[in-house]
Image (cartoon, rainbow, N blue to C red):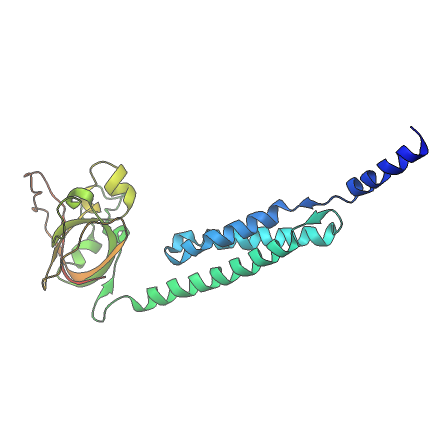
Length: 225
């Protein structure tokens, strides 16, 4: 190779030596920031902005250690800042909802508190549930898809999660609450979580529409959210 040919190759060698790699953690941080809007829909999605912050911090740390080898600092900064803001904002929103969603005169309850004590299998209905009989409670759950094709209804089953109602077969008796809405209220089936407030009743003799053993719990719904 003559001198002229070597002079033509040299610039290519210098360009290759100066090549910088796009930071994968920067790209991940920005990607999670875009997905983090879901954290405002469900508190369970808060891991999305948290992941965006973690990957962003890792990326910025790598830029400080290898400034000449990496590129993509702007996406890293955008991903970190956006994810951080969405994390704080979504947590603040869900905290506010939690503190203000229970109507006055009602007591917050959960399906967990309605389950039998494993140490006392002889008591299918726990004392906690019996104590709630006749009290005004606020509880969240999902509408059982048995009414999916019926349009707006005022009578349905409430279950604790989507796995129970859609993929878990027949729910346990203590995983079902028979709901009867009052004041002309109705709802159409959807897969979103619903909040209800009403008078809680315990009745082991409730029967399902087909005559089989139904749920032990009933809620006369006064407020539907």
